[in-house]
Length: 357
Image (cartoon, rainbow, N blue to C red; front, top):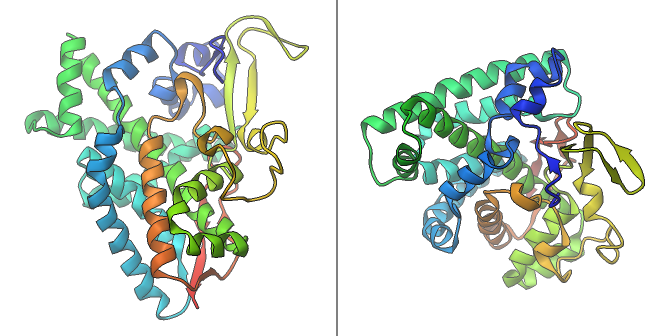
């Protein structure tokens, strides 16, 4: 993932695949222009312009408002559990990431539900082998995302402030003299960061609760030692990552571990398997919140130039949520196995029912 000879599936690569519906679909073409789908020098230019989005200063500033959002969501969960079981995925995991990115980017709460729905639809385009019907859903969702974010940028231009998006607009107005091209870049940046933040983080939040529930000894240890929540988050990320597979294309003819790979040929990197590699982690199939190494034990946020740009925000959300859950609900338990969306790459927990007591 760090070898520069392996490329993201950018627009040029997708165009070379001809008329295959998998790569010529509008949703697929849009991914080839977004940050995660482009290669240097375009990728380098955009990442440098963005800087470190979630540095310690930004994370520190978000700590209090996101803590308030977590408390509000857990209030709703508690209210629902008074009548029995409640869907943790629907009430908490789906809502926290969009509220967090909305707080940071200045997205109105009234738009959160729409963005969650569009993101779920667009995710089908990132699957390994999407069906024709899934691509159709992804195409419709992608058009909706383009309409939303181009409108958001247009409106923000009319009322520039000191928010994140306004600062991006000022940066790209200096970098790109063509206003239309600047706004197109801004659209791809905002769209990608939002969909990446929503889909993966919501899965982390639910799978973290499920994994701890299935390892009561580790959950009990964590309740006795709440200062170890950050380590528990890292181990949950390693044990069951939100993205199981990512893909690269060969930038040239090469040899990979004795296998000849031609230029443009795809390889699929199974992140979930890498996280359980016994050459990397001792007893890899054991969930151990005191495992040494923390973030060095997994590839759940990727690696190299495409390392997840929102990793700091995802960690903050997971940490805040887990701290409050173990303190507020000492008898919370999962009442039924999670319901999973039938995906391979960008996984999604559709439902996770919990009860208190």
